[in-house]
Every structure is written in structure tokens, then in C-alpha cells.
Amino acid sequence: MNTLSNRINAIEESATLAMAAKAREFKLKGIDVISLSLGEPDFKTPQHICEAAKKAIDDGKYFTYPPVGGYQDLREALAAKYNKENNVPYKAENIVVSNGAKQSIANTMLALINKGDEVVVFSPYWVSYDALVRLAEGVPVIIKGGIENDFKVTASQLEAAITLKTKAVIFSSPCNPTGSVFSRKELQAIAEVVLKHENLLIIADEIYEHINFTGEQVSIASFPGMFDRTITVNGFAKGYAMTGWRVGYIAAPKWIADGCNKVQGQITSANCSIAQRAAYAAITGDITPTNKMVEEYRKRRDVVYELLKDIPGVKANYPEGAFYFFPDVSSYYGKSDGQKTIKNGDDLCLYLLEVAHVSLVTGDAFGDGNCVRLSYAASEQELKEAMKRIKEALAKLK
Image 1 (cartoon, helix red, strand yellow):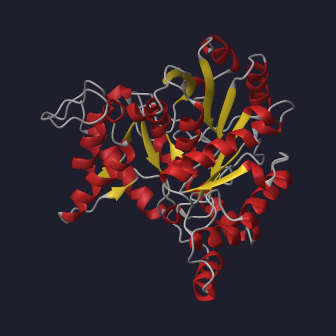
Image 2: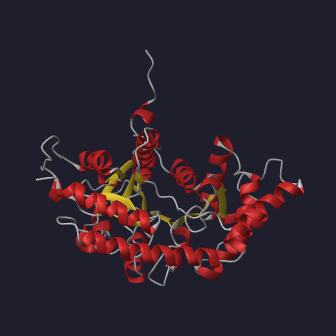
Image 3: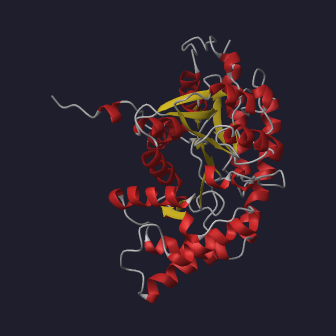
């Protein structure tokens, strides 16, 4: 009998990648699909970053294996960035550079979680949090922030979820999929709960830190006592439009960084040498291209928000970061166009792909089946057309 391992059977295919694949199938048939399913910037990587990669190739010095945890100068630059911008006193020894922030999270789970350990996951959550906890044979404990609270979990909810088996807590801010941003006051309250519980750790995903419309990005590691309790996850994919370069990193207490380095050394070894030179140029270079991208995202957010408000039965919060909306579409569940009845978010996303030719991702994958995720990392013209198609398709459901 051909049987996969229990750990693989315990996890699902990434829903975002699955929907993107389905959208590609439609496009191959010649159908004009507007894809709003992947969390991928539609901008090109800034030119100075690309030039740094070209120079690294031409220099001929970067064709040997890099150190597993990343080049020393890149790790020093990342630590300096956190000292200067986030008020967290990281050193190079606290940094591990990986093949994307997803590997950074996987490394962390494998380095810290034993079978049966509980990890509190703030919901709605990025699709892989839950799966990576289970891959490490941990137990995800999901606590939900509702749309009435901007999808944000409270400190009191966290306190109520902690047991003797709780090893860690994971969340993102700005959040994928909701775009919500935890305020300084909210993070302070969460930190106070964590500090009450000896050995409890926080995994803080800050991959969207640059795409933040509030004017302040707060790192929970910056609060008193939290340096030793926090694994900060970050990367270059979103803020620098470098998804394909695959550069992520953690910043963490040295004993955790060393553990992640050990995991990575056995699975992939180092991140690509040329990608690291590009990342170094990004972190030390001109931030203007990033700021321009962020302003464009802000404009798109406002356009989409107004268009979503104009669709009957759709409820949406006003996201303060990232490039997503996570609208509640449950008012359409149970309705039909005469041929197909919409039972849940999966049905609705498939319906919108087939009828409106717009791809979204079901909220079930992010921990809230009442919602769907919509990425506005697309041109304003595409977004307006997509919202028009969605509105027309939903109007057929009675």
C-alpha cells in the first residue's frame, strides 16, 4: 500500500496556491480571469536591487555555498535595521536568513514545538500557520477576532486560551488576510499576558511592516521583557516586491536562532547567494520605490473599499495595512442562480471564478468561513473591472 506519512496527511494543500492554479487553468482556456487570489505585488522589483544581483553575478565571488544562516553583512544590516526602525536590539547572531518567510516559520515550529505542544493562533490567520503547527506535531488552538473588532484578537481572549501545554502564540501585523494592524496599546496588552506565563513565546509575523497605513509599525519584541520571548518573522517579498527572490528571515534570541539554523542546515542550507546580495541592496538602499508602492496600495484600498460598500450584503472592514480585504459574504450562503446553490465560501469562490471570471480565496483557509480574501495587488483598472463583475454575478443569486 502506498501511504503518505501521518504528518503529511494531517495538512492540506495551500488554498491560495490551489486557487491560483485553478485560475491559471481558466486562463489557458482563453478565459479573461482577473486573479485576486495570490498575495503577490504586481510591481517589479526596484531597479537598484536587480542591479545589485547582476553585479554579484558579474563579480564572480558568489558561486559557493553561503553560510547556512546568511551572509554576515546581510545579517548585520538586518539587525541594524531593527535597532534603528523597530527599537529592538538585535545583533547578527540573532538573525537567520531563509528561503522566504514561510521557511522561517517552518524552521521555528520544527525547532520549538514538540508533539502535543499547543500553539495559539490568532484567527483570521495566514493559511500556513495552522498547517505548519500540525506539521511539527503541535496542536493549533484557534482564537477568533471578529469583524466587529476589526478582526483583532484581544489580550483577554489570549489569556483565556492559554493552558499548561501552550508553548507559543503566532499572529501577523499587518495581518494577512484582513489587513488589520495591532496598535501599540493592543500589543502592550498582549505582551503583558505573555509575560505572566513563564517560557511562553510569541511568533510575530511582520512581513507586511512596510505596507502599513497607520504611520506606526510596532514590534512586540520592543516592549520590556519581550526580546527574550519573541521570534520576529520578516522578509523581502512584500515591501520590496521580491516574491520570486525567496528571502525571508527571523530575528530571535540566540538559542532559538541557533536551533533554526540547525533545522535549516539539514533541510535546505542557505538562501541563494545572489538573492542575498539583492536583499542586502534592498535593506541598505533607497526606500523611495517601496514608499511609492505603498502609496499606490493606499489608493487602491480606498477604491476597492468604496466599491465593496456598493455591493449589497457584503460587509468589509477598512484595512490599515497589507493589500487585502476580507469581506463577510455569508449573506449569499443558501442563495442560488437557478443552477447552483451557494452553500459556503468554497462554493462562492468557485461561482465567482466560473461566472465573473474573478479568482478569490475562501475564508475557510484563513479560519473564517463567512469571508473570502481579496488581494488588491492589481492595477486600479483591473480592480474596478473585478468589482463590477463580482457585483453583477452576486446580483444573480436569489
